[in-house]
Length: 270
Ligand SMILES: Nc1ncnc2c1ncn2[C@@H]1O[C@H](COP(=O)(O)OP(=O)(O)OP(=O)(O)O)[C@@H](O)[C@H]1O
Ligand SMILES: [Mg+2]
Image (cartoon, rainbow, N blue to C red; front, side, top):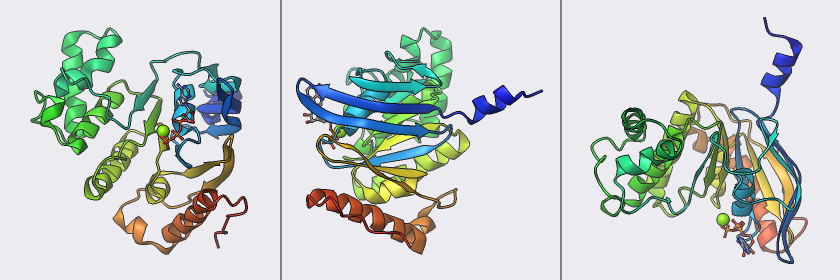
Protein backbone atom coordinates (compact mmCIF):
# COMPACT_ATOMS: atom_id res chain seq x y z
CA UNK A 1 0.00 0.00 0.00
CA UNK A 2 1.31 3.47 -0.89
CA UNK A 3 2.13 5.63 2.12
CA UNK A 4 2.00 9.42 2.25
CA UNK A 5 5.79 9.43 1.91
CA UNK A 6 5.61 7.31 -1.25
CA UNK A 7 3.05 9.70 -2.70
CA UNK A 8 5.21 12.69 -1.83
CA UNK A 9 8.18 10.98 -3.45
CA UNK A 10 6.27 10.26 -6.64
CA UNK A 11 5.29 13.92 -6.86
CA UNK A 12 8.78 15.19 -5.99
CA UNK A 13 10.53 17.04 -8.79
CA UNK A 14 13.17 15.09 -10.70
CA UNK A 15 15.50 18.09 -10.88
CA UNK A 16 15.85 20.90 -8.35
CA UNK A 17 18.14 23.83 -9.10
CA UNK A 18 18.47 26.28 -6.22
CA UNK A 19 20.43 29.49 -6.42
CA UNK A 20 22.78 28.01 -9.02
CA UNK A 21 25.59 30.26 -10.24
CA UNK A 22 28.63 29.66 -12.46
CA UNK A 23 31.83 31.65 -12.86
CA UNK A 24 34.69 31.16 -15.28
CA UNK A 25 37.54 33.03 -13.59
CA UNK A 26 35.99 36.45 -12.96
CA UNK A 27 33.25 36.06 -15.56
CA UNK A 28 29.93 35.36 -13.88
CA UNK A 29 27.90 33.54 -16.55
CA UNK A 30 24.66 33.05 -14.62
CA UNK A 31 23.50 33.30 -11.07
CA UNK A 32 20.44 32.78 -8.91
CA UNK A 33 19.00 30.05 -11.14
CA UNK A 34 16.05 28.39 -9.39
CA UNK A 35 14.08 25.74 -11.26
CA UNK A 36 12.19 22.56 -10.45
CA UNK A 37 11.58 20.06 -13.25
CA UNK A 38 8.97 17.36 -12.77
CA UNK A 39 9.21 13.70 -13.66
CA UNK A 40 8.20 13.30 -17.32
CA UNK A 41 8.27 17.04 -17.87
CA UNK A 42 9.90 18.64 -20.92
CA UNK A 43 11.57 21.97 -20.25
CA UNK A 44 12.85 24.07 -23.15
CA UNK A 45 15.54 26.67 -22.51
CA UNK A 46 16.04 29.65 -24.81
CA UNK A 47 18.29 32.67 -24.49
CA UNK A 48 20.94 34.61 -26.40
CA UNK A 49 24.24 33.08 -27.39
CA UNK A 50 26.68 33.08 -24.50
CA UNK A 51 24.06 33.36 -21.72
CA UNK A 52 25.19 30.01 -20.30
CA UNK A 53 22.71 27.42 -21.58
CA UNK A 54 25.38 24.82 -22.34
CA UNK A 55 27.14 25.58 -19.05
CA UNK A 56 23.87 25.06 -17.20
CA UNK A 57 23.33 21.68 -18.90
CA UNK A 58 26.90 20.72 -18.01
CA UNK A 59 26.16 21.57 -14.37
CA UNK A 60 23.10 19.32 -14.65
CA UNK A 61 25.03 16.33 -15.93
CA UNK A 62 27.89 16.76 -13.49
CA UNK A 63 30.54 17.77 -16.04
CA UNK A 64 30.80 21.22 -14.45
CA UNK A 65 30.59 22.15 -10.81
CA UNK A 66 28.39 25.14 -9.96
CA UNK A 67 30.13 27.83 -7.92
CA UNK A 68 26.95 28.76 -6.11
CA UNK A 69 23.83 26.89 -5.12
CA UNK A 70 22.90 23.29 -5.61
CA UNK A 71 21.82 20.88 -8.35
CA UNK A 72 19.74 17.95 -7.12
CA UNK A 73 18.55 15.08 -9.29
CA UNK A 74 16.24 12.61 -7.57
CA UNK A 75 17.02 14.35 -4.30
CA UNK A 76 20.79 13.79 -4.51
CA UNK A 77 23.40 16.45 -5.33
CA UNK A 78 24.95 15.93 -8.77
CA UNK A 79 28.68 15.74 -8.07
CA UNK A 80 29.80 14.01 -11.28
CA UNK A 81 28.48 12.10 -14.31
CA UNK A 82 25.64 9.77 -13.35
CA UNK A 83 24.21 6.67 -15.00
CA UNK A 84 20.69 8.04 -15.01
CA UNK A 85 21.56 11.30 -16.79
CA UNK A 86 22.27 11.29 -20.54
CA UNK A 87 23.18 14.14 -22.86
CA UNK A 88 22.80 14.66 -26.60
CA UNK A 89 25.25 17.18 -28.04
CA UNK A 90 24.84 19.68 -30.85
CA UNK A 91 27.81 18.27 -32.78
CA UNK A 92 26.44 14.70 -32.47
CA UNK A 93 29.50 13.65 -30.41
CA UNK A 94 29.98 10.41 -32.36
CA UNK A 95 33.30 8.57 -32.54
CA UNK A 96 34.36 8.68 -36.22
CA UNK A 97 36.15 5.32 -35.94
CA UNK A 98 33.10 3.48 -34.59
CA UNK A 99 30.13 2.24 -36.58
CA UNK A 100 26.54 3.19 -35.75
CA UNK A 101 26.28 0.01 -33.67
CA UNK A 102 29.56 0.80 -31.86
CA UNK A 103 28.54 4.39 -31.19
CA UNK A 104 25.03 3.56 -30.02
CA UNK A 105 26.29 0.78 -27.75
CA UNK A 106 29.11 2.89 -26.31
CA UNK A 107 27.17 4.19 -23.28
CA UNK A 108 26.33 0.61 -22.28
CA UNK A 109 29.89 -0.57 -22.85
CA UNK A 110 31.32 1.98 -20.43
CA UNK A 111 28.70 0.85 -17.92
CA UNK A 112 30.06 -2.70 -18.15
CA UNK A 113 27.00 -4.26 -19.80
CA UNK A 114 27.77 -7.67 -21.42
CA UNK A 115 28.46 -7.59 -25.17
CA UNK A 116 25.51 -9.76 -26.22
CA UNK A 117 23.08 -7.54 -24.28
CA UNK A 118 24.62 -4.36 -25.74
CA UNK A 119 23.94 -5.63 -29.24
CA UNK A 120 20.26 -6.32 -28.54
CA UNK A 121 19.62 -3.04 -26.74
CA UNK A 122 21.54 -0.99 -29.32
CA UNK A 123 19.67 -2.70 -32.13
CA UNK A 124 16.34 -1.87 -30.49
CA UNK A 125 17.15 1.85 -30.30
CA UNK A 126 18.70 1.93 -33.77
CA UNK A 127 15.35 0.68 -35.06
CA UNK A 128 13.43 3.13 -32.88
CA UNK A 129 15.24 6.14 -34.39
CA UNK A 130 14.87 4.80 -37.93
CA UNK A 131 18.48 3.75 -38.59
CA UNK A 132 17.80 0.08 -39.21
CA UNK A 133 20.05 -1.18 -42.00
CA UNK A 134 22.78 1.40 -41.24
CA UNK A 135 24.25 -0.43 -38.22
CA UNK A 136 27.62 -0.94 -39.87
CA UNK A 137 27.96 2.53 -41.40
CA UNK A 138 30.57 4.96 -40.06
CA UNK A 139 29.55 8.55 -39.18
CA UNK A 140 31.18 9.97 -42.35
CA UNK A 141 28.84 7.77 -44.38
CA UNK A 142 25.75 9.27 -42.71
CA UNK A 143 23.84 12.50 -43.29
CA UNK A 144 23.64 15.05 -40.44
CA UNK A 145 20.12 13.89 -39.59
CA UNK A 146 21.26 10.25 -39.42
CA UNK A 147 24.20 11.19 -37.20
CA UNK A 148 21.84 13.02 -34.88
CA UNK A 149 19.54 9.98 -34.79
CA UNK A 150 22.55 7.88 -33.76
CA UNK A 151 23.41 10.41 -31.02
CA UNK A 152 19.84 10.24 -29.76
CA UNK A 153 19.81 6.43 -29.86
CA UNK A 154 23.03 6.34 -27.85
CA UNK A 155 21.51 8.56 -25.15
CA UNK A 156 18.32 6.47 -25.04
CA UNK A 157 20.10 3.11 -24.62
CA UNK A 158 20.95 3.86 -21.02
CA UNK A 159 17.25 4.39 -20.20
CA UNK A 160 17.93 7.80 -18.64
CA UNK A 161 15.77 9.43 -16.00
CA UNK A 162 17.01 12.74 -17.31
CA UNK A 163 17.70 13.47 -20.97
CA UNK A 164 19.65 16.68 -21.61
CA UNK A 165 19.66 17.97 -25.18
CA UNK A 166 21.92 20.84 -26.27
CA UNK A 167 20.59 22.25 -29.55
CA UNK A 168 20.51 18.73 -30.95
CA UNK A 169 18.83 19.75 -34.20
CA UNK A 170 20.64 23.09 -34.62
CA UNK A 171 22.72 22.13 -37.62
CA UNK A 172 20.02 20.24 -39.53
CA UNK A 173 17.99 21.48 -42.47
CA UNK A 174 14.47 22.67 -41.67
CA UNK A 175 12.73 19.57 -43.04
CA UNK A 176 14.92 17.04 -41.19
CA UNK A 177 14.66 19.13 -38.07
CA UNK A 178 10.86 19.11 -38.15
CA UNK A 179 10.81 15.37 -38.80
CA UNK A 180 13.11 14.69 -35.85
CA UNK A 181 11.12 16.98 -33.53
CA UNK A 182 8.01 14.88 -34.08
CA UNK A 183 9.95 11.62 -33.86
CA UNK A 184 11.41 12.78 -30.56
CA UNK A 185 7.91 13.60 -29.30
CA UNK A 186 6.72 10.13 -30.34
CA UNK A 187 9.64 8.43 -28.61
CA UNK A 188 9.04 10.53 -25.51
CA UNK A 189 5.30 9.72 -25.43
CA UNK A 190 6.07 6.00 -25.55
CA UNK A 191 8.82 6.28 -22.99
CA UNK A 192 8.33 9.50 -21.01
CA UNK A 193 11.33 10.89 -19.17
CA UNK A 194 12.49 14.25 -17.84
CA UNK A 195 13.89 16.25 -20.70
CA UNK A 196 15.76 19.57 -20.72
CA UNK A 197 16.00 20.85 -24.26
CA UNK A 198 18.18 23.84 -25.19
CA UNK A 199 17.40 25.51 -28.50
CA UNK A 200 17.67 28.80 -30.37
CA UNK A 201 14.48 28.01 -32.28
CA UNK A 202 11.49 29.49 -30.47
CA UNK A 203 8.98 27.41 -32.43
CA UNK A 204 10.84 24.23 -31.46
CA UNK A 205 10.96 25.34 -27.80
CA UNK A 206 7.19 25.85 -27.71
CA UNK A 207 6.38 22.70 -29.68
CA UNK A 208 8.39 20.45 -27.35
CA UNK A 209 8.16 22.08 -23.95
CA UNK A 210 5.64 21.94 -21.13
CA UNK A 211 7.35 25.17 -20.11
CA UNK A 212 9.83 27.46 -21.86
CA UNK A 213 12.55 28.99 -19.70
CA UNK A 214 13.85 32.31 -21.02
CA UNK A 215 17.35 33.20 -19.81
CA UNK A 216 18.73 36.70 -20.18
CA UNK A 217 21.04 39.34 -18.72
CA UNK A 218 24.73 39.62 -17.94
CA UNK A 219 25.24 37.66 -15.82
CA UNK A 220 22.16 35.85 -16.95
CA UNK A 221 19.38 34.38 -14.87
CA UNK A 222 15.91 33.08 -15.56
CA UNK A 223 13.92 36.05 -16.83
CA UNK A 224 10.59 34.29 -17.29
CA UNK A 225 9.11 30.84 -17.41
CA UNK A 226 6.31 30.53 -19.96
CA UNK A 227 3.72 27.77 -19.53
CA UNK A 228 2.81 25.86 -22.68
CA UNK A 229 -0.57 24.29 -21.91
CA UNK A 230 -0.99 22.80 -25.39
CA UNK A 231 -2.45 19.28 -25.36
CA UNK A 232 -0.32 16.21 -26.10
CA UNK A 233 0.26 14.36 -28.29
CA UNK A 234 1.48 17.32 -30.33
CA UNK A 235 1.64 17.00 -34.09
CA UNK A 236 1.88 19.30 -37.13
CA UNK A 237 -1.66 20.55 -36.46
CA UNK A 238 -0.40 21.88 -33.09
CA UNK A 239 1.81 24.37 -34.92
CA UNK A 240 -1.16 25.62 -36.94
CA UNK A 241 -3.27 26.32 -33.84
CA UNK A 242 -3.94 29.88 -32.74
CA UNK A 243 -2.83 29.09 -29.18
CA UNK A 244 0.55 27.80 -30.38
CA UNK A 245 1.10 30.92 -32.49
CA UNK A 246 0.16 33.16 -29.59
CA UNK A 247 2.64 31.50 -27.22
CA UNK A 248 5.36 31.46 -29.90
CA UNK A 249 4.87 35.17 -30.46
CA UNK A 250 4.97 35.87 -26.72
CA UNK A 251 8.29 34.03 -26.31
CA UNK A 252 9.63 35.66 -29.48
CA UNK A 253 8.89 39.13 -28.06
CA UNK A 254 10.66 38.23 -24.83
CA UNK A 255 13.74 36.98 -26.65
CA UNK A 256 13.80 39.87 -29.12
CA UNK A 257 13.57 42.23 -26.17
CA UNK A 258 16.80 40.65 -24.97
CA UNK A 259 18.46 41.10 -28.34
CA UNK A 260 17.47 44.76 -28.60
CA UNK A 261 18.89 45.27 -25.11
CA UNK A 262 15.51 46.19 -23.69
CA UNK A 263 14.72 45.10 -20.20
CA UNK A 264 10.98 45.52 -20.68
CA UNK A 265 10.48 43.52 -23.83
CA UNK A 266 7.72 41.28 -22.58
CA UNK A 267 4.45 40.92 -24.40
CA UNK A 268 1.48 39.28 -22.78
CA UNK A 269 -0.36 36.18 -23.78
CA UNK A 270 -4.09 36.68 -24.03
N1 LIG B 1 35.22 26.04 -20.08
C1 LIG B 1 35.08 27.37 -20.16
N2 LIG B 1 36.06 28.20 -19.77
C2 LIG B 1 35.92 29.54 -19.82
N3 LIG B 1 34.81 30.16 -20.26
C3 LIG B 1 33.79 29.40 -20.67
C4 LIG B 1 33.87 27.96 -20.64
N4 LIG B 1 32.69 27.46 -21.11
C5 LIG B 1 31.94 28.52 -21.41
N5 LIG B 1 32.58 29.68 -21.15
C6 LIG B 1 32.02 31.03 -21.32
O1 LIG B 1 30.78 31.06 -20.62
C7 LIG B 1 29.83 31.83 -21.35
C8 LIG B 1 28.60 30.95 -21.58
O2 LIG B 1 28.94 29.90 -22.49
P1 LIG B 1 27.89 28.79 -22.90
O3 LIG B 1 28.56 27.92 -23.89
O4 LIG B 1 27.35 28.17 -21.68
O5 LIG B 1 26.75 29.70 -23.57
P2 LIG B 1 25.49 29.27 -24.43
O6 LIG B 1 24.31 30.01 -23.88
O7 LIG B 1 25.40 27.80 -24.51
O8 LIG B 1 25.84 29.88 -25.86
P3 LIG B 1 25.42 29.35 -27.33
O9 LIG B 1 23.96 29.71 -27.48
O10 LIG B 1 26.28 30.17 -28.25
O11 LIG B 1 25.69 27.89 -27.41
C9 LIG B 1 30.52 32.30 -22.61
O12 LIG B 1 30.97 33.62 -22.39
C10 LIG B 1 31.69 31.35 -22.77
O13 LIG B 1 32.77 31.98 -23.40
MG1 LIG C 1 25.56 26.40 -26.10
